[in-house]
Image (cartoon, rainbow, N blue to C red; front, top):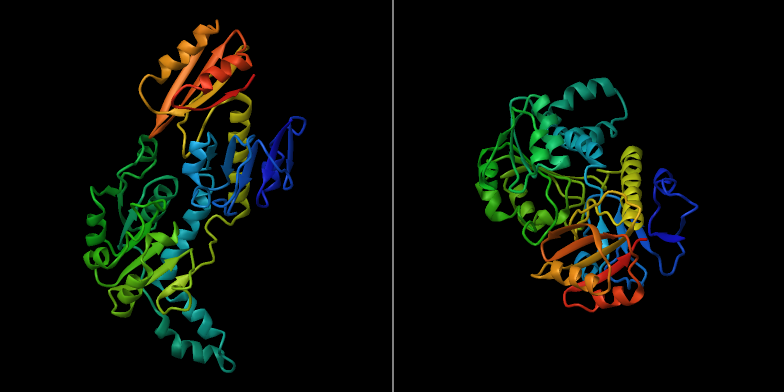
Length: 385
């Protein structure tokens, strides 16, 4: 029976997606076959020898040591798109919050004690704002969430410009025809009244909003960040708010530098915090783990390629290895020497890492697996059945 450890509270609909005759699921497992996690920090964790996979119930994986896992042959999954609608809806709210001083107006209204209606009519002009229709929104990152935000903004009457150097064909197909695609981020910075960030936190995107990029933007620009705090240099942003170059900043990632700051609206990481999003993420993560543990198929991994083979009656090996020359011949040669004939095979690579699935009518014995494992470049060999 495979063991699944839960590091956070996972939506019951996801936990119940597993066949409980095949899986033990608990928070107290010492050396699990797989882990399900939401926000728990894993960088300082030591992983047991049995751990084959980690499924993040959400899109961001900066709480997981992805590179370390790849080196140890642990496949890390995420759930892109499962929470997209929840984040999209919050992004629409963020656009409105940035446009009209709704938060300030509510706080002021709650201070009124007498003759409230008259006081409201007298003082409301201090909280007036502008409408979204006719304004230009720049969307940086057009994946599952960014694409939905772009489409939603277009339906609200905004002019939308999007930029994503890594956009997939599938993502492009889902964009409204009215959305203009920019070749560079600079085009977004120069032309837009609003900018919404929807890219992962990486070395390349850290502090992508800084004094230099802000200087390219229109005076009075409004910035929405529901992606990750690290995308914006907080000190540079606060300087731009103070001098009026940026008129509003809405973020879903409060920090010590951004809370209690005029011009910044800090939302307590509510983007994916809807019942529907949590259910969708948990179910997708459970299905990814089940397909990998039972069939060796990889879908939505952040450190290994997507690869799959149809179900068969034979025996299957999952071979995780470095993406270096001659690996296929090394694998097939090792199997051939042991008299294992390959019925079907699939190989895919992603960056420095690759995965080869092998189906054979003869089961690979321990000696065969040991021989493959000893080859240069092989990270891990897992026998599925």
